[in-house]
Image (cartoon, rainbow, N blue to C red; front, top):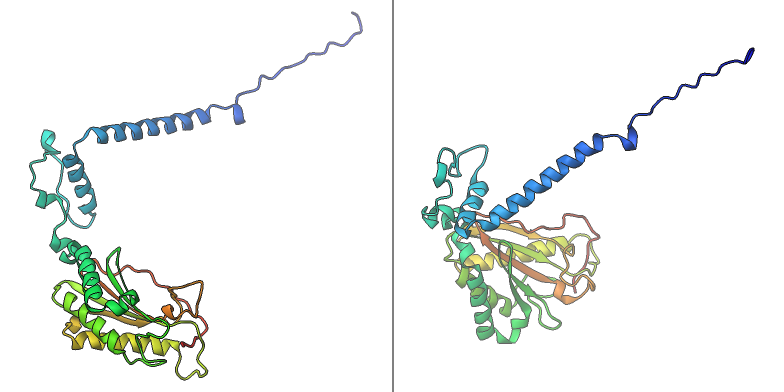
Length: 272
């Protein structure tokens, strides 16, 4: 109509940005592809014989960027996973991992048997267990039956007999190392001149001397340390006499020691 203004409406068609864009599809496709490759790898591994899986595992566990310890697969074609390679070339040798590792279960069993036979009256005060890297022997106090004189670093006759049995069984293991630790309970000393730190260290050192007196080569001693009351055996009862103990760890020289220890400063405590 005459005199009427014409209104033109422009409609802008929106894109598919933001949550409706296509970038997520690329990420999702990458994820699905990766998962497919992963499951395909798992399926292929399940079809491979144990001998071939062993060889693969050995290759990747030995290969480093610094040397050529692992045997190369490059250029071998169809014989890449040849299973005719001698087992000694695939499996770790005693020289690599220490012969002690092959006998630690036997050592634990032998020590337990001898403690039951020769120290039956105090066998419940000797804890022998296999840990990740060796065998741990703990001499533990009991009410009325201590392993050391009260508040001192003097071994009791029973403790000396136990250490003698331990020495007899470990002194001829050529690649074994020995770590000795002293522990106390959480009762406070009345003086600051001689504390649980000194007492636990002195007791560990006394145990070391007794091991050496019974024939252990001093070169086999790796560590002698006192931990006072920072590593309690009975954590729910800090004053329990069983917290007072000596721990002797026998481990492989080639594997080293990996037992984690608490490295904190706590209030100095007094033993019973």
